[in-house]
Each structure stands twice: as C-alpha cells, then as structure tokens.
Amino acid sequence: MAERKGMIVCISGPSGAGKGTVLGKVSERFPGMGSSVSVTTRAPRGTEQEGVEYYFRTPQQFEQMIKDNEIIEYDTYAGNYYGTPREHISRQCEEGIDCLVDLTVAGSVALKEIFGDNALTIFLMPPSMEVLEERLRGRGTETDEKIRLRLSQASSEMQRKDEFDHVVVNDDLQTAVDEVIALITAKREELNKLTK
Image (cartoon, rainbow, N blue to C red; front, side):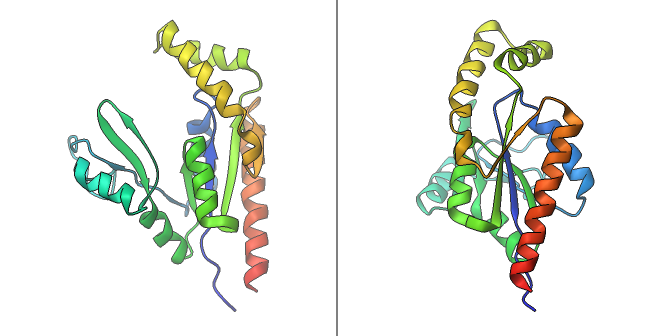
C-alpha cells in the first residue's frame, strides 16, 4: 500500500475572524501536525533560531527566492519581507506529515494551485461585519483609522470566500473549531482511501 503524502490545512480569513484562536484549538486536537516556518528579512530577535521561529534571509536572497518560485506568498511589514517558503511545506508533505497553516487569502489560493487535492482551504468568516468591528474594537490596540482599513480589507477578502474549499462561520468558537476538526478528519479519510 502506498503511503499517503501529508496534506496541508490552510485557514484564512479577515483580521478579527478568530484564526489564531481556532488554529490553537485545532492544533491541540491534532498535536502531530506540522506547521509552516516563515522566511523574513528582519534580523533575529533575542533567542530566535534559524528554522525554528523564522528562516532569516537578506532582502537580496528573499527577492531571489521570489524569482525562483520558492515563496508561496509574501508581504512587507515595517520595511521587511515576510513569506511562506514552498520547500518547508513540500518536505513535510513528502514525509507524510499533515501541516496546519495560517495564510493570507491570496496565499491560500496560491497554495491550492500548487498542492491541489493535497490542500484543504478553509475560509473563517465572522458572523457579520458588525461583530467583526466589535471584535477589532474590543482588542483596544488600534486607532479608528486602522480599524476602518481592516474592515475595508475584510470586506474585499470576504468576496473571495468562494475560492475556498469550505467556509466556516465563527459565531460560536467551539462550534467553529468542531467544524474545522470535522473537515480535517473527512479530508484525511478521503486521502487515506485514495492510497489504499
């Protein structure tokens, strides 16, 4: 019987949809899952180690990785590049390790194009724009202008939800977590059948 490759579970959604919380709960349920280590051009901080917190590269190296199609998706923040390296995820898949990642909407779509049926893309939706605004304001960390920008970005991201395999509405946290777990379990069973 052929060993199945690892699958990539990719969760995307607007800021404030609860991705981090859902990912944390799902990770607890599937403790053996791999993850993605991002590559960045910023300098290591404190005790950060190469290949653990990040892969650290120069801007020139990062730009070469983009040219060589080694980056699935990337963004810039505070003058530094941050991206998802293709090789790290590919290696885990080849080793049969399922991987759980949090990517931008564009990153999820790109990942699906690269990995096809081995990728499960889930869009995490807030129950409404009003609830999303409440959550963002509830953080107490951002200005009105920043919140307006996040809401505008959320609106355009939500228009792309149909490009995902599944949409999960995070109205009740436990229900959303249970839905994601059920989707992962079903996808695992589907892939296992294909390799029998």
